[in-house]
Image (cartoon, chains in turn cyan, blue):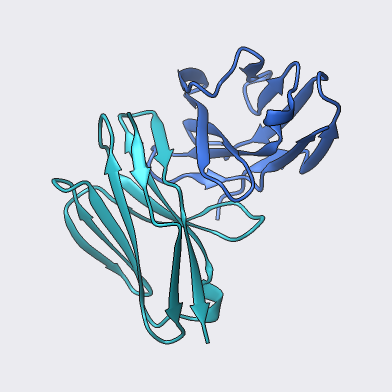
Length: 109
Length: 112
C-alpha cells in the first residue's frame, strides 16, 4: 500500500518552533516534498528532499531518514501567519505523488 | 511563481448530470496531475500524465471519470454521471520534473 501518515494537529507558540512529522510506507521512494495549504486555498510548495539528512532553508528546514521512512518539517521563529496545514508528499516511482493526511498547525500568541 | 489555471472555480450540479473541469497547466511542464480533496481531508491522487499521456490511475478514478487533452494544451476531467460523493475540490497540478508540483486554485464541485 501507499501509506503517508502525519499527526492531525499541532500547536505551538509564536516565536518558538514547530516540528511537523511524517512517516511513510510506500512501494517505492523517489523523493519527498512538503507543502503549505491554507484553508480554502491550493497547496504551495515549500521543500523537496531525496537524500538523508537535514536541509536548512531558513524559516523552513527539512529532515529525511529513508531507512526509517521518516521526515520532518521544522519551522523556526514561528509567526501567527504560519498557522496552516502542512502536507507531506512522497513521490512513488516516476509518476505518482501520494500526499499525507496533513497536519494543521496552530500558532498561539 | 508559475501559474496553473482552473475553470470553473465553483460549480453546483444536480446528481446524475455531467460536469467538465478544465485546467491549463504551465506550458513547458511535462507532468500533470488531478487530485480530489474533500473539505478538511487528505489530498487524494486520481490520475497523472507524462508528456500528455495517461500514466497511472488510482482506485478513486471510477468508470464515470474521464480525462482528455482536447487540443494539446489544456486538460479536462469529466464526471458523467455525477454522484453525491463526488462533491469535493478538484485540484490539478503540473510539474517540470515530477518533484515540485504547482497547483491550480481548485474547482469546488457541489453535487446536490
